[in-house]
Image 1 (tube, rainbow, N blue to C red):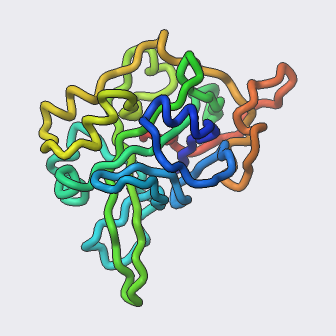
Image 2: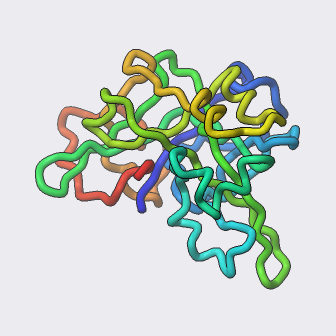
Length: 235
């Protein structure tokens, strides 16, 4: 599975979107990929922490399934054994500046697009996290990002959309109140086309080994045709 997002926002911008925090020193990231560390805010924990992207349930025998569990569908999260037990006390927020999705083209070709807020401010994905202990005793903290059905305007790119939160909805997700299906529907609100900007970008982002602002740079007129890629972030 292929998935990408970026976090290149300043501490002040994150404070404005998610509240003041002691954000750790970090470099801007323009091509965050599955199994890599992501910055997160977790219920009941004041300081931001690092989680590996790709959930490993605490009851798993090994960590091999992490790359296949980067997402959790909001429609089934209350029934899936890997996720339902985490909704009570293991909710988290994963800050982001934007995310990438690939628009289908001729044949198997797909063009990468960067999606960000129209005003340029950051947001957070709603997530769930867990703690897994390896046979040797080491602890691995991992997370998955919630998704929902895409709004109509997004369907030309993909049929899924991340659950994106800011302000009161972000506070509710990290709050101590129980989260039932009605509560999830209340915070999992579709963003409108006016809220978002979709920018075609270079196919550099297709490779998880590439980093830097070039991954998020608007597509140049002479950019070569895109190469085939796998599924998008929110499949």
